[in-house]
Image (cartoon, rainbow, N blue to C red):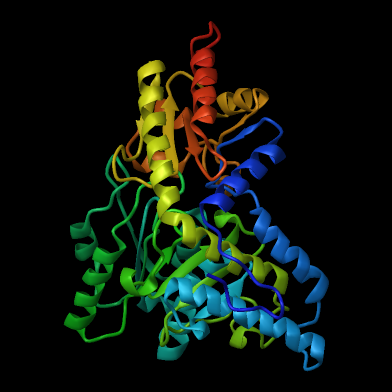
Length: 424
């Protein structure tokens, strides 16, 4: 199967043989290192790099220009939009290209509230929103900014595995609730959220109050490589996609916004993207996003099954061989590529640095939390200070093998058993 021909560049989809080739390439580029931070950023898929390499040379024209070079670039961008829309089961005009997941989340939260306020000629203080206590920083900080402008926000609590209670969501809904934002997959602990059930709850609320709101936004940045991102089936009105989480380039993402959902631009000064996002679109990056989502879609099911087996093995090995290891988040039913453990008695940052010196890349939390020492997600699980200070995330991907994980567990086992082990 091929993508639509993009002005002479065909973006092929590839199956098992290409996936194996990609794994070998990732291993070669790492030069013996083991990379387990795919939830933060994935290596660029070699095939995506090929598409983009050709695009940088051939499609340099401004897609807003009327000359040949501009039209050629515009054709590429619109073909890429069609590819993304097809995989999300959306209409092309419902896709807006942005700089990445953070901007898409900002547009899907702040952009929607501002547009709704202007359309209804009501102050922001007239609205209420709902989200969870464990969202990505680019969602939580949007809601905190809106609170400063008068919006009322309910932050749903989670249980010990990061799950929300749908009954709590129903109780939190108000007639003035304008937006609900719940991520598809938690990037730190791997909890998957029941988007379809949430959508049904919101539809019932809309019917009861005979209104179009609340709109439903999801940050699906972690989703496409391991689970379905069909907007129609999931029932969402807005969805965030980030290329760097699906083996695509950094600096590009997209916001799906269903027809009829108002969105106000955050970047002004141009009519690009139907007036929703000023600035010249980065056509090669957009083509890279399209190539990446095409690639992950064709191997998603197989890769999810493979990673699920690796995840289960890793959890069992850490718990059986390292006495101080404590699982954070779901044991069953979580995303197949994310595992989070606390290593009691250790400082997580110190442990990550020592593993890095041994050629193994792990992380302590989402890098978007900046200088914050501990994770707000682990805190929301109700964990104590010892768990918070020692939490480490393992996120798996195309390059991950069982041999890699065996080496990781052996290194952690040796470190945690060393005389210097207790660092807190």
